[in-house]
Image (tube, rainbow, N blue to C red; front, side, top):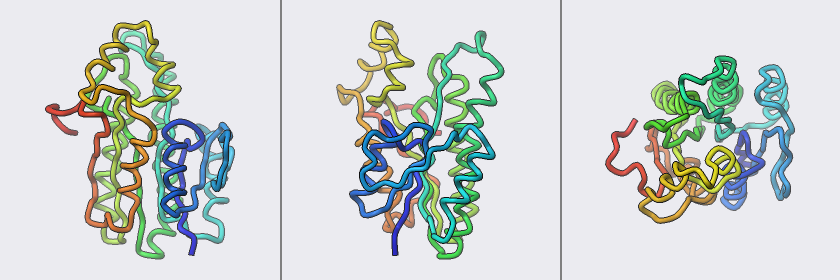
Length: 239
């Protein structure tokens, strides 16, 4: 039987790293993204604008048709950085919709398959910004929502053999990081200098953590948050 893993926002950066590792681990990755992957490899790809509720529903109907998909990585997200005083309230719906609603919608769509076989793995990708960061009101709130979702699902769904956990990346080498943290900005230098590991993380670092949570052997690990940040969050209160 094929073991599928659905990855939202899986075409680039962290999502692509997760998809590549999933394939190495013996799963069949299904990528949902508005941007096609440069190298599809052994992945299945569905082009979709996940900010569109109806389009998301349609693609999920295709994904679950005549097959059981029992692993889900909720990775898609947008940032929209701004100080509180400068926030555009129109961005609230955009960020919360993509970063939170999509996770709920995809989990709901896969839940019947997971319950049917008595097994499921859900991994939400949050961020160390849930502990606070300047200019990230909406992003940090939406990623904290990913933590709340997983902790609630862990309690609700454990009786069906389903786990829900969170990987919270720190500073990772992605196009989004460089777009939202200009290299000449002193705050960018401060972020990098503060990492005890002495380097920015890679998508592969995040994929390693996701791989652990997706494994059958991780059945007793549920409702947990793993910070993958090179030690940046050490000594700070966990969520």
